Amino acid sequence: MKNKLHYNSPVILTFFFLSLAVLGLGWLTKDWTTLHLFSVYRSPVTPLWFVRLFGHVLGHGGYSHFAGNMVLLLVIGPPMEERYGSRALLCGILLTALISGLLQCFLFPGYALLGASGIVFMLILLSSLSGMKSGTIPLTLILVAIIYLGQEIYAGLFVTDNTAHFMHLAGGVCGTGFGFLMRKTK
Image (cartoon, rainbow, N blue to C red):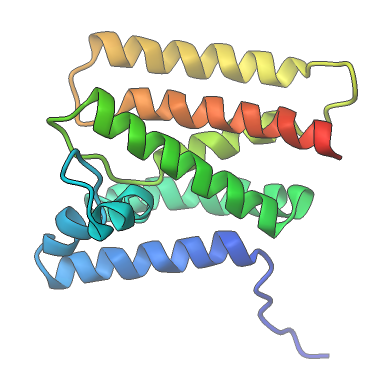
């Protein structure tokens, strides 16, 4: 019996390979493509602005930024894709990218945003809703939300770094909303 590679999670794996290609392209262009195609920031609304509005989740500021996001994406994403389906998860990713991109443009006009952290945090909160039964709120959701929200709020207020803590919160809110929405539609 031969073991074959299985493309077990098409949305998550495609997201990973697109992000890897964007990282490589950024390296080849000395980050020109990362800034001009895969970072979102306030600018005139053009076709390229729409590319950046969704594509910013594929861009990363370097290998360590990429690796930190992708390890979590590859661990948490496949079970969520199996549970909710590829189409629904893709919609959740696109909606999270859209919301975080728009929030960035409106609330933080002088800064650029890139990276999959919002998507990862959407998946983290979504995974904490797994196994939720009708009429109940999982204790795991409350614990993850307290720890996660507390950490992000603290970091956003008291830590000076290059991290978009507000967009992590936005991703978490999207994941929670998506999880409750999917529960109601099933």
